[in-house]
Image (cartoon, rainbow, N blue to C red; front, top):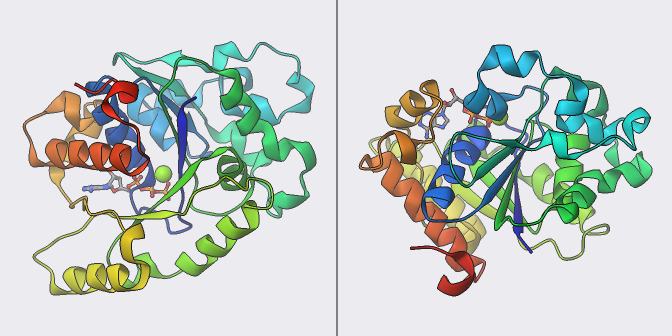
Length: 269
Ligand SMILES: Nc1ncnc2c1ncn2[C@@H]1O[C@H](COP(=O)(O)OP(=O)(O)OP(=O)(O)O)[C@@H](O)[C@H]1O
Ligand SMILES: [Mg+2]
């Protein structure tokens, strides 16, 4: 069975999609088979791999929107899965067609709350599933959490970045009534500039407040991430010697260590 992570935070621009994109590259470069689910109607993760014009032109039944559309309940779901140009990375894209399904009050949407969980359970051959969520806690994020084993919260170490974390934590607690196996959430400091005193202070504050749930690896603000994204390549495949690639690699290893996947099960070189 794969381990499923959802990346959530209602704060926009904190690095959810970027982390999914580059982390998938690090896992894949280490030999894992990664399934990426884009659960954000903005389709940022999908655009990272496919470009905006292709993503905008995708039909509903080529995207994760299909799973929420009762009219397409019996349609063939395999067509959502898209191999990427990178060995070990498969993408299920999303675009604006997911937007009407991202309703508030997700706990009132009946069995559709399990749509992603069921879809993931139908897949085989993947080691890791990463689900990218939109910057709110509506149905897309909720169904991702219902499907997840682990919640990863990217947090920029600043005031606006750390605000709203309590709402995320409360939402995770509520999801546990449907998904009691959901593990303790983990926080990932992202977009950090260690030259800034305020960033160093907020990182320490997060570690004081949330202890070991804060990942030791910190993802810095680095142009290599942006450049690699522009080239439509996870940084590991764009410039594996860059500091950004090395740190993403460290993050992948820390995650595998924390979830207890040993060398024999994780196929890591
Ligand atoms: N560590 C980083 N270093 C440099 N740029 C970054 C980093 N992380 C993210 N970015 C850039 O910041 C912007 C926002 O990042 P991203 O889209 O990943 O955030 P998000 O949390 O997914 O946003 P949204 O909430 O809108 O989905 C993107 O242009 C991305 O390339
Ligand atoms: Mg995003």
